[in-house]
Image (cartoon, rainbow, N blue to C red; front, top):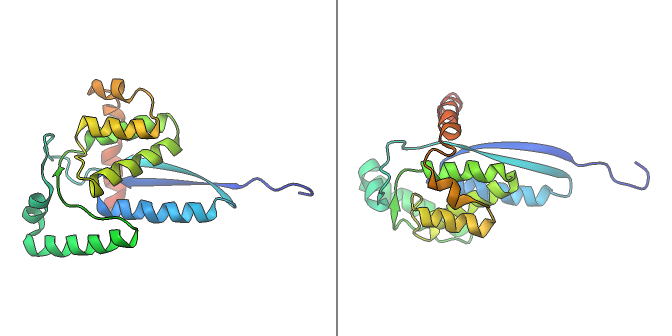
Amino acid sequence: MAGGSAAKKLIQIDIVSDTVCPWCFVGKKNLDKALEASRDRYDFEVRWHPFQLNPNAPKEGVDKKRYYEEKFGSGMSGRMESRMSEIFRGHGLEYNLSGLTGNTLDSHRLIYFAGLQGHEKQHELVGELFLGYFTQEKYIGDREFLLESARKIGVEGAAEFLEDPNNGLNEVCSLIPLCHYFWLSI
């Protein structure tokens, strides 16, 4: 095109993730670097889809460190913590295994809701949730943490949406089995 630039190509990226998966956070940090390095040539639409590593995790939460030790054994858990700490430091972050872990359904409902307000907002919210959970001892099932994250990103109506436990439930739950199928078939 003489005198102008051609339209940038749109690249759509679909991510299946759980909000308590440290590798998902690392992947997002790496993806963000790649997106930033390519924004002059491409437009991106990143969409987040729900996955639950432990759909039976309790809503009230359990001690994160103890949970990992029970699940993987203390030796493996310690090695995993050391490795994640090293990787997080490479991203300028401090991996923190303190605090609680538990059911992630409400975080996925909120991510779904943010996506209705735009994929960029959804992508930013996921980053905020990861940052709080993995570096600031925030509990992913805590309503106040979810709402604080939504406020930081500018998700409108989050409190009202989360107030009704049925909002977004069918949409999120209908995707989880599909996401499990695709993840397990890779």
